[in-house]
Length: 76
Image (cartoon, rainbow, N blue to C red; front, side):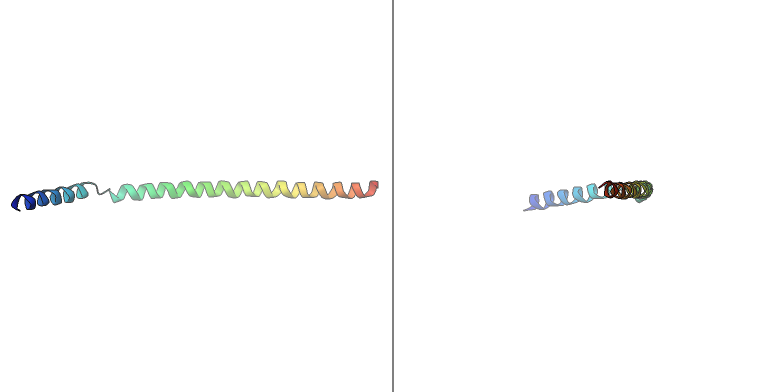
């Protein structure tokens, strides 16, 4: 019984010490989160710019199709 308690105490202490040693630095986490947030903002700006280009090309294509339909209907 005494040996069991000694082993249990050693296991508990080692688990506590290892969990304390593994706690990350909150400053590093905050820096990482800020860097990721800036990267996401940059990506969102690129997506918005790309969407604007897509909308412009789609409007141009729509106009081209409209003109083509007009000429197509006149040739009949």
